[in-house]
Image (cartoon, rainbow, N blue to C red; front, side, top):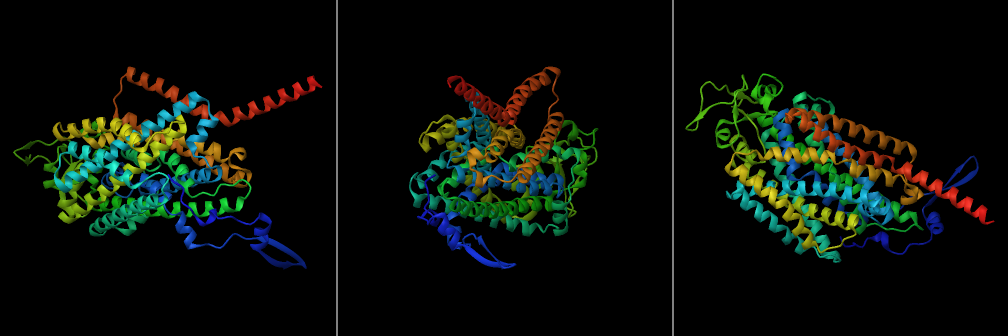
Length: 574
């Protein structure tokens, strides 16, 4: 990203002059105390910092995130809104840490990882992040293809090809090193987020959700066994590992880096943090709109209960269902389940067998228990809320796919440059990422189109994979932002805040791994050999995670040993 000039980058007086300028006098017991004050808040200066936070926030609004939202609402009603809220809060804290790292050091997280970790560890983390980015890319390509199918009736595979190619158009807007074109691109992103907010707010309003239930869902933690996979999928879709690397790089276009003048850096950190909070608050509202609209329109207690009943085929398949209007259910390739027995219903000549019991939504609308994903959501919305609601939903989905595609490209660029010290042109990076993601996306699209495959299963698995990769972003982030050597002493949080962050992160990992284990048990009926493979992979994974956790202590011991050795050598020389 090019550097955008801001007011904070103009020449400043010395620290002594600033201290005198920003001081106030107060007399206490006859003594005069001089207390330095921060520069007053400036809307103009804040506007000059606006941009990176909105690009970062797109990771919270990509098609994979929207699919997790609609499934959360349709399958669990408002029960998991608190997961979305607290994931956003945690994600916001990590994003602010990432922004401070980039602002205070003048380097982004991938560059610092390469400088601090051994090469083997560096390459391992890079491989993990590339997997995450490619997985996100698959979701974005498929999500935009689904939206194009809803709007224009295009086959999914054609939509995938169009989506894979159109990123080059957006890259033409952004010319590295050109401040003006960079601002144009940032304004484009803000416009796309505005479109999403407007579209999903309209659907939210039309669906008339319960404000009391929304509030209850945010403040009251509830989770059932059948919602475990949904919860971990939401966690993975919201707190994305590669987004931490992205934000630490994007803020450098605004940051004022000077170890000799802490004031400008602290001021920049305030504006950068404030922008991130505003962007993520808007992102939370959009996520809440989607969850609430689908919760109000499609949730059914009968369908929800099937996933918890061990005797049903729904439970055996490890899936969840919601109440889809009959006309929409019959247009889907997904199986229809009886609301009482949970068995698959027979369909002949477009007519569901009379023995198949219908479900009823919370608004007492009849339908059938069925899975729902991005592909089915458009038709379901059309049958429930009207044709225009379907079009509005699809427009919002296109905006989501297009914007998140570009941020994914940026993330890939910075990750590759930082970890490998390999700098390539943006169009080459897009070509590499698109080629690696297009193959799987096309396969899923063709299977979904012609073989009745459920593409939402792929999206859920990608979300779970992203949640598993969190340690490879969060542990390095906490390690470096708590280091006085790397950050500079004025910019390191006090020990109480650091302790709270570490404890919170460990708790996040604990909850995450518990839910992932439950998801594996629920989704895959693995043989003993299958579990043996899982154990071997988990051992390598655990070894890498434990090394990252132990790295600060290893470095401290190494530094002490080198200091003692140097001291002994000097004594011998004397």
